[in-house]
Length: 218
Ligand code: ADP
Ligand code: NI
Image 1 (tube, rainbow, N blue to C red):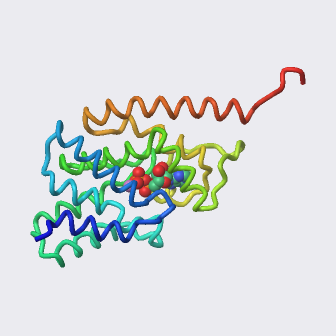
Image 2 (cartoon, rainbow, N blue to C red; image 1 turned 90 degrees about the horizontal axis):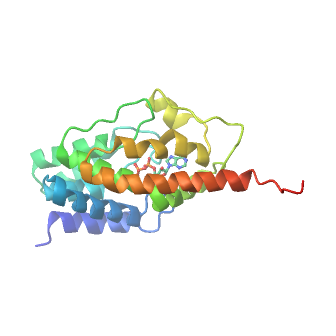
Image 3 (cartoon, protein in one colour; image 1 turned 45 degrees about the vertical axis):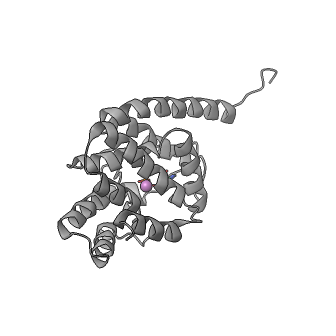
């Protein structure tokens, strides 16, 4: 019989293949693979980790009309319909509900090692070269300006502000991406995050230099 992880993996693959919003199937698989890598040194239940990683974007508020607690419910029902253990399904639901970033000054604590790992893997995929690519892809999908020099970046105090206020893709670096490496939970993830963080800093330095290019002869 096919394992629960393999069944969910097939289902998620057919649902997310072809998505161009930054929540594509490849993002999900990178989160699964990074989660497994982190589990090797950080511990935790591998099945719960794999299921939560596969299901973590199942119903994102940014794409489901703003419903914040939909993902966990959808994941829980999917697992129970496949005959999965209710207590374990609750553990997966908890992770799906709490994995997301909710703004600079809004805590997004997660209290299980399985949750900390999946959150770290998801955040690692939001930074570095891949993170830069995903952020511009997301911005394009949402018709958001790449950069508006006069629009100041904000450190949001509530999730509602973070989710609803107008921003630019470059501001998103200051509102989220550059804050993530400091917020990783596990030691293994922090080591990986450091390098990717520096890459984004270098990218922004170059971006601003090109944007503000002045010919020396002017
Ligand atoms: P994650 O999968 O890391 O939880 P999200 O679901 O928050 O990330 O967002 C998916 C991708 O889109 C991420 O790479 C994220 O940084 C990017 N993103 C989210 N909001 C914005 C925004 N306002 N502008 C540009 N990119 C964004
Ligand atoms: Ni994700």
